[in-house]
Length: 135
Image 1: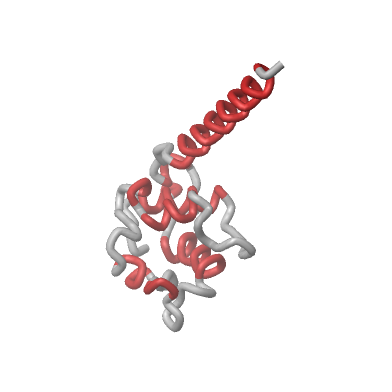
Image 2 (image 1 turned 60 degrees about the vertical axis):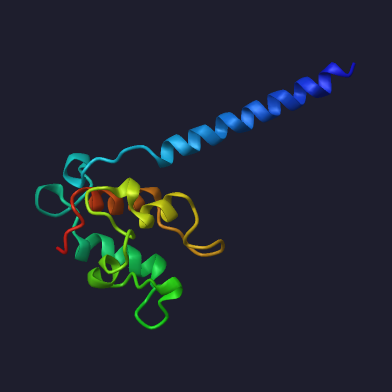
């Protein structure tokens, strides 16, 4: 009789651990450059900062992370201000870029605020993978 609660607890812990690994694997999955992923509308399918990335960041992050407020010392409204923050965007390495880590991890935008779609986050990551150019 006492074995059933222990077995149930074991199955519950195992199930939660399996779910946690799936989420981690999805967050850490390598991303393709934008042209290879076919995500962009620019030349050769490339995603540009000015036409794709900047509008997403302004729409979903600009309320708090702008030139006036710079919440946490971060302004996400211009290329120069984004690249001025060490580690925020690591050209060629979206998995090492703090911007992708907080977006993928659900840390930002905060609870109650609209979030970019996974496809939008993928476009930002693809732009970073392509070298995070000011284009």
